[in-house]
Length: 552
Image (cartoon, rainbow, N blue to C red; front, side, top):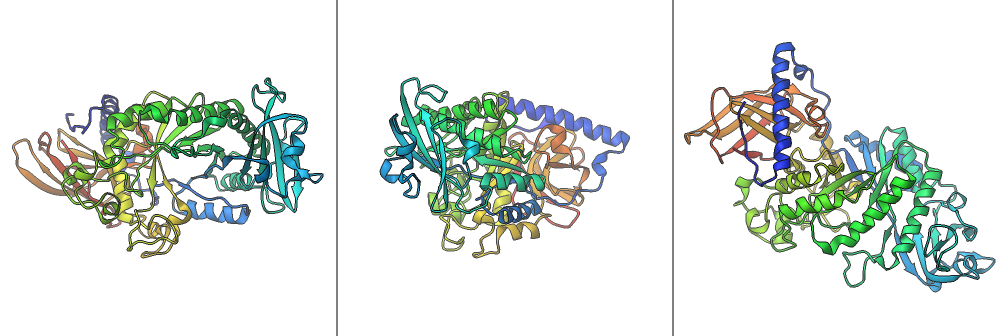
């Protein structure tokens, strides 16, 4: 069948994948007609499209279990925490309670050695004996607080530095007696609930002159400490719920060489994960910035930038969860025929009043398509990181957060803009953007109440008049389509949704939560370059709350 569809950017790899999806979908539809398609089976219970969340962990097992239980209740199967910083220190800034026989613990542990630099690190884990590797390493309790001291070689990988110089790291452990530590607790909670947990990796401090770049002046110490961190996790977490690790140091999705120090950081830590915990994966979450008044990053730069990030994976299973930047005003969620409409009040608080097309280079949809094309063939996979907040105004406070509450319809619009590009959608962040009460009830509660709302993520207008609609909560009901044919005549038609397929995403190698239905319009055509608009009312009588359009 002919397919009336054109992309808004020149992305041959993405186009090729979409063509394959079209052919496979056509086969499924024909097979279903001949054999009684499973697409007509009963719809699954509604599940919100977001399947993972960034969280703050707790040293309390009960708190962690309850939080993950709450997240699972709204469709979440994945949680991610941020890493702690390895901070440069001096002997004077080592915690006062860390003493060995009354002597500063960093001084005592490194007695007789030449020390290059001192560092501190704190992540509410126990550390202690399972983390000690070299004879000079020490663990102790001072004033009820656990500490571990590492004496790391400045050169080489053994306990004896090849240049005779060492770096000393003082780790402040879990603040509560008897706790297993945050990472162990979350991994156990995730395992018990059939979920996945990604623990934050250690990160360096930011540069004092260019705060968006890491201080790599102590990369040897960070490399050695990364090794100790991962060996400790391997020693104390034997849980299938530990899916991998998260790289917390952020960068934009771009091909600019100025961000190469961050790529080198990802590469170093991915190599360490692959060497020490090869059965675990890694996640990174770079951000978009399409503001004309900001970084002005183009879709081509995103395509190339996504590929550069993907190539830091090494042998690690690597997921790139691109932030849609809708919570910070750096990204725009709009369709091409909305470019001349005014930005919403939340975006306006960042970029000022004006139209979407005036304020942003391109819609988020184009950027996600570009990222998918860049990642294709690298072995990495594309996720979407939906920012679950909105720029703050006086109308949407959210506790004491820098950003404010968002609306369910805005979230659905963000989901639409990701299209079918990401294989998984996660969100920043559960604490407290999904739990705060402000102008509205907590977003987690609003999600439950609106769990049956259809979300349209993509469509294909075929030459025989069939329109494939993909998204979430699409089963049953009707599809309304407005279009213009090749003769310039406009139409609007509402038809029964047919060929419901709950497994569309998994069959196509896309997000497994994607569903599809077909709208059979009869013999017609779609004008080249003409927009068509789709609305869905599902079998529960609920209509999509976010505008959707596409172009022939």
